[in-house]
Image (cartoon, rainbow, N blue to C red; front, side):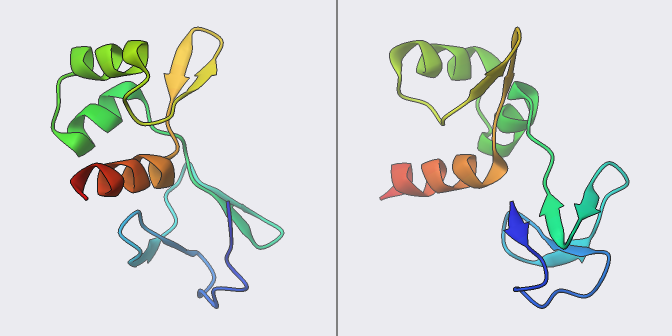
Length: 91
């Protein structure tokens, strides 16, 4: 969660995962100046990292992959955490 007012973003705008400013999507909402980014599904992370979904499940089982949140029986990923994890893997 980022404070859009502190970042001095125009109304209806947000930061993208690569820190570019883009318009809010229909499924995003602004509450009191805070922008809530939607969580990614395992398919979203698979596309972003260009790895098969099965690899993400294996990494999770081994404790090696990006951090995930379990919501009921579903896995969700914070886009910023995935991006940070990927950058740490490259170094």
